[in-house]
Length: 337
Image 1 (cartoon, helix red, strand yellow):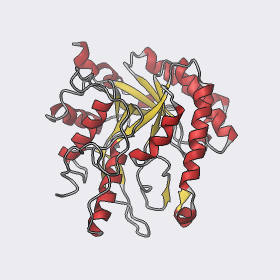
Image 2: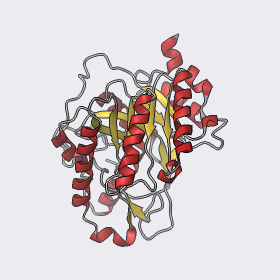
Image 3: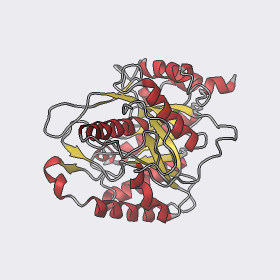
Image 4: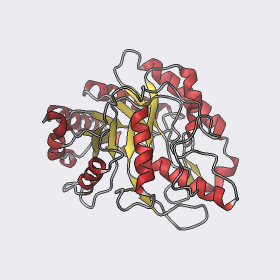
């Protein structure tokens, strides 16, 4: 059986984490709401047609250095308020990934606290968070990944306590098994089992942002390596983290990043153009939606022009026309009709 056509894993499949309590699949499935991203410092990227006809928004700030001055925070605040006033049915925020080591740097952690407070004040439902524990290829073999995960979980425990009383959820995102250029790693949360230590927090706030594109990269890469080693993969394609799935990111990919090669992996490819077979990608997305409870699904799809979006609309069309998905995706326009 090829790595692209594995069925839904049976309980106890090796390499899968013990599942958290999931919504009852026999009950009515609460469909997911599609969202798209915009640069939180560039209001012109907000697609008003999308808000009116399709769904919600996710505001991101890529670099922590972009929030170094008070005027930048003011701009972010004004743009989040604009998105809310526009009537976005769901707003989420994505904390920076560059120059934003909130685990090891006190200033970055203070930025994260301020970012969360601003998100809550602006009506956002949650904040997406990467571990941001980058390791260069040359240092990877000597890197203590377990210790890094322990530090990250300890910091998440502090964040959970600091946010006591806040309505926000925190969605810790899974990253690919290797960076897009094959030269670095951010591997604290990659496989479903990596989330097991979060169970010890016993927090209703902290869960996973399950990035289907990242998981597709990880699964297919590791399945390919297992094939070369004449063994079945030790990961099931539809495996999910043992903590609640708070939020979902979606896209496909093309190319593959491998250490010591110049190949790159392009993320955010529309599913019709990606390297992974569409039925498997659709099954991965549906599994994540079923594990959540009416989540947002952010279409992290690259555009040629973010002021004139095209690929997010063709991806939405794919979602609503794919038999395996059409019952679990509800665009806002359809919900209002």
